[in-house]
Image: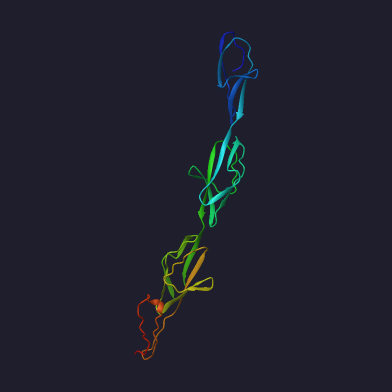
Amino acid sequence: GGGQYDYDTAVTVTAVPAVGHHFVNWTEDGTEVSTAPNYSFTALNNRDLVAHFLINSYTVALVPGAHGTLNGTTAQTVDHGNDAAAVEATPDSNYHFVRWMRGGVEYGRANPLTIANVTDDITVTAEFELDTYTVTFIAGANGMVTGSLTQVIGHGGSTTAVAAIGLAGYVFDHWLHDGGNYGSTNPLTVNGVVANMTLTAVFRPALTVDPDGAFILSIPPEAFPAGLAVWDLSGHYE
């Protein structure tokens, strides 16, 4: 360090930067004499040495993952201890922002994100996920449903099939959704899911016939593949 030294004595001066700063060089009378923080010389005359330091600056990079974009300055140079400018993650249609990731570890879920008190280089990536919906199948009175009754489905996806089965003396009639008839397909696979849904299986009493009564058996044509004959079984049976 500085001080008084005998003539022809070996001297070493050391520059130590404060936290968040780095050494640049030694100068004498405005002229650079060394870029090493430890500067050694022989004391032959008085010398006025000045150590120069600069604040550290870091690169902050914000990267969009798949299915989204970023709004704001995504590549920033920030001085030690300062804050980066805010950047907002915007998902594509039918996706949503989930989190910021850094080096495979969750960094946070704030959106927009302001990285505060920057003390090193940092890269964070915005993660997005497909919107999902819950599809619930419910059995109405006098029946049951089988299969996966609560399903989480990605936007535009399909459920697995669920079957409605009537209890003794009852048969399945139709599915009910939002107060309307959703159809009589059974088992049912819901395709193109774009919202939460609840489907209720509705059951009706099975037809009964007295021992000496008459009945009409009707088979709808759609019950048979094209090209197969449909027999007319209408009549009276004992």
